[in-house]
Image (cartoon, rainbow, N blue to C red; front, side, top):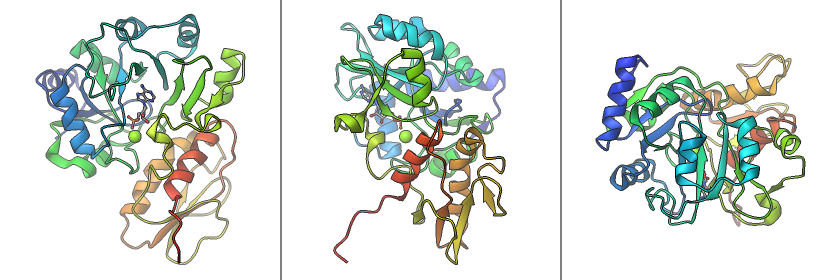
Length: 315
Ligand code: AMP
Ligand code: MG
C-alpha cells in the first residue's frame, strides 16, 4: 500500500510500526525499511524481507542528538561533528550505552551502534509520532540497488510490507556516509552523501577509510553490492550494441546523470536510472560514462565499482 504522506497517513504508519509491522519511508538519502529499534520480532522481519545476512547490523534513526545520547556514548568529537552534520546524511558509529535496551539482533551483538538523524521532514514526523528510534536499512533486497522512489520499494516488496510512505524522489539518492568514532582514529566505513573532504575540513585532520585499515566493518564495503540484474560496465566512453548507456556531462544519450556535470545531481539520479535501465527488457547490459572522482563523485564511483564487480572465473 503506497500512502501519500498526509498527517493522518504518517500517524497510521506510526501505529503500524508500534504494533510491530515493517513499513518503508523516505529519507534524504534513500528509502528506508523501518521497524521499531526495540522490537526484535519486527527487526527479524526486516532481515527476512531483505534476505540480509544477520551479521550486517542496522542503523538506528533518531529524532535528534538527545535520542542518540539515550542509546550511545557521545564523545566531544561526536558533539562537534553533530553540530555541523546532524540532522543530515551522516551516520556515526559510537560505543553503545551499557544499559541500552536496543535490539541485539539489530546491532548484530556488537558493543558499538550506528546512529543517524535524518533531516527529511517525513522521516522526522514519523519519528516524532513513534517516539522511539527506528532501524531503517535501505529498502531493497540485500545486494541490489537501493530505492530512491516509492515505486522502487513497491517493486521489491509489493504487499509483503504494510505500507510505503511516498515522499517522491530522495534528494541525495545515495546512502549516508558512515564515520566510525568508536576507535582511536576516526574512520570512514562507507563513502556516502557527505563528501570525505567536507568531513576532514570539519574534523581538521585526515580521516582513514576502512580499506586503508584493511578491515571490513561495514558490509556496505563488500566487493559486490548495489547491483542491477543486468551486467554493468563502468568508465565507458562508447557503449556496446544492446547496452543502456548512462552518460554524464554534455552529451546526447538516453540517460544523462547530469548534463551540466553537477555531481550532486548525478548522485540523485544514479539509482533511479540504474532501476529504469534494469527494468527495461530491451537492454542486455548497462554501461556508464566516467564520473569524476572528487567530492560526492568518490561515493558514486565506490557504488559503481561494487555494482559492476565480477568474481574472477577460470574461463
Ligand atoms: P544499510 O542499512 O543498508 O544502509 O547499511 C547500514 C550499514 O551500517 C551496514 O553496512 C552496516 O554494516 C553498517 N553498520 C551498522 N552498525 C554498525 C556498527 N556497529 N559498526 C560498523 N558498521 C555498522
Ligand atoms: Mg543498503
